[in-house]
Image (cartoon, rainbow, N blue to C red; front, side):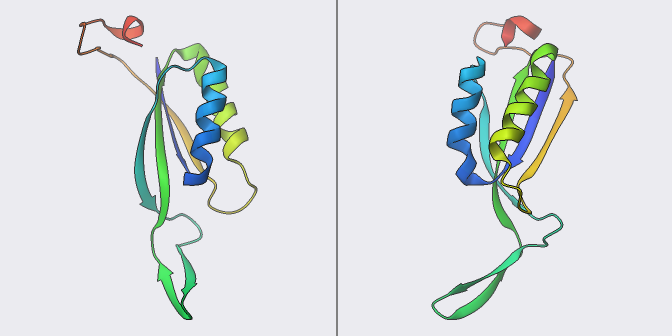
Length: 112
């Protein structure tokens, strides 16, 4: 099993969800995150005053999947979230040893 984690721009989440649903992915966890990469934040102008946002708002998407599905999930998220501009985000995949569904006690792939 794999845990696919993506940090993406908030406006992309609806399209990511639709694309993953079409792929057959049944669940995901989405949480708010903020941070910066190479762009080191950015400045904005509000009512004539410029201010610096040190941390850019993002969404963190986490999906538990079977090993065979991880590459497809990465491909779909990258394709949907890519705008070609700095700050599109990152995706990483890590192995998962054990998963337990709390409600039923099912383990590993049965818990997915």
